Length: 280
Image 1 (spheres, rainbow, N blue to C red):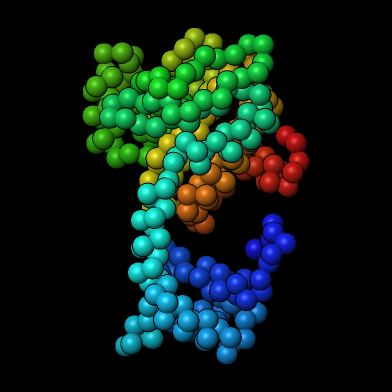
Image 2: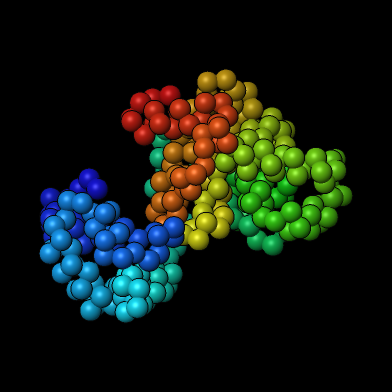
């Protein structure tokens, strides 16, 4: 991993590399398996690191299988993280970057029962702006910022929300589910005049370490601006920051997700260009 500090330590680099060998897909590893993931660490050093981590409770070893796994110290630190966690504060740098790169209104929305709620907002600096205020409640099934919060729920839960909003909807449940399937396939939601006239929005899911959607990161603007190449830019920039936001919460996208299942309007290509520092 690339260092951003002058206080780098080669030994700590090795310790962190060993810990990063473990994942949701690989929760238990033998010594040989850890060594295979850390070919640059010599056998003796690796053994000492594993033993010290085990002694301190950061790893535990199964005496029968010889497998190592994350230890109870991580549970303690997880509780500490939750105690000091502030979603709004964590989101701010990513929201500010979307705003800086697009100039559009940027929202952080969460779900509260049958409605969505704006947890934070950075308003557009452009002549034509979209009004959005912190604390504003919005329907979940009209507009990208609401739909992204329900798209990954079970169909049964979506039906409950649908029944709640049904008097205000002009579509059947199956039609709504088709929209949900498109969002799941693409990995984000786009809407035009769905809630407010002449308003467009792009929204990406924000997931915690377990993969649950805990919020939505959205960019909103006049429908007249959100078209063609500019819409592609909004999708790429918002998607890139959402990806970084997810990583900050401990979530890593499933490597089995193929570009074919996520591509729309050149999203993956544009995100790659954003990652390389290229303007889109």
